[in-house]
Amino acid sequence: MEITKRTNLQIEGKHNKPILIDLIFKEDKKPKPIVIFCHGYKGFKDWGAWENMGKFYAEKGYFFIKFNFSHNGTTPDNPTEFLNIEGFGDNNYIKELDDLQSVIDWVSTPDFQEAQQIDVKNITLIGHSRGGGIAILKAAEEKRVDKLITLASVSDFGSRFPKEKELEAWEKKGVSYITNTRTGQQLPHHYQFYKNFKENKERLNIQKATKKLDIPHFIAHGSNDTSVSIADAGNLFEWSEISKLLLVENADHVFGISHPWNKEEVTKEFQHVLNRTAEFLDASVQELKDEYIDNEEADS
Image (cartoon, rainbow, N blue to C red; front, side, top):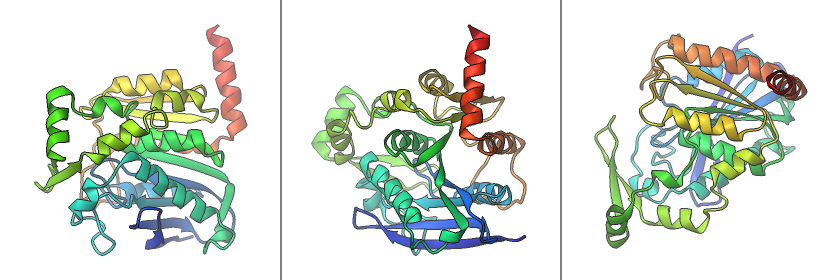
């Protein structure tokens, strides 16, 4: 059966900018487990091989959703280009959590356009990099999430902000800039980003959220990741009660993928991640919990 795609659907979020969404699934009128993917910093739903990932899970019988955070800097007309750089500057972690909540609420409504195709009692979140942190926080506070997969995820937001003089200069100027290495653009961060983090520090504590998780959590990280330390994966594995850890030899932050990605095949590193996460998704929550208990008893 062919894969069906609904691309660039728009829903309204809570922050006056639309959220752009893709659906990838087999149109067989059978309820399928839902997989929702969160892109990372300076990312977007159509980056690299995220489309290949969606097709892979759809072939396996999952209803795959990927979306652009409303303030990621792209626009509905240009979903792969950072043309709304002021929107990028106005982004923060709370907006991303709200956007993810909006997507979960939208797909869970009885009048969802593909309601026949989904099982709303079976939702997995996947997050890459910063999106991994967002997925962890949401999984800890949203009871409808059954499983969690994080790819090259951060384990702490606070440590990624500038310190002391650099922080003071940012506050005084009201804006700092980061270079988008792919496009050469200077992308702004307004000081509100840090202020919003400080105001919501408890809610945005990834360690606290991870320790609160009582669902199966698959953690994948490349051994050659220079963007997010492999130690972050170790932290998440230590904190997450029902977790599996996959360290991918010689893989970088994006598992060898680049943008644009115009091939049907993905890298062997990323394919390994997809295969292992598919095994994780195919197992029931109870099977994974039982496996965790068995492993604990074997270690004791």
